[in-house]
Image (tube, rainbow, N blue to C red; front, top):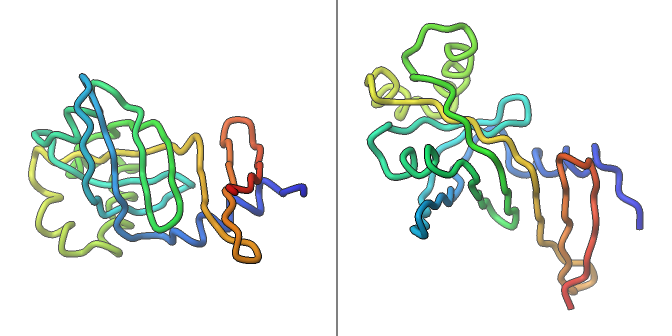
Length: 154
């Protein structure tokens, strides 16, 4: 069965929405950690804010390959530190306005703290679990290759 890459990507982003919480896994020096982050989607990138004194920030600085999970979707990506959340550069203020729209309490509480940074994750691989006639399968999406593959699990 052939899959249309653009159509499958749109289904994924429609499912995860413009904002939720997602489990973020980071790791460095054989020390993996996972926690929930409040994210937004902007231009097919996943963004969240965090403090530069926290474990996830330190791990991303050492190893920017990260994993995310929401519902039945797993995402592997590359994390980039964009800058401080209170920076007045246009691209940061635009992103923070979107963040404010979806996460007002977090925005009010943390965004003006000088140690808060904005992190962007660029997805490179997405795996979605689903069922067809009661049988499990996975859809593998490679962002770089723009390919989609379906694989029955059993």
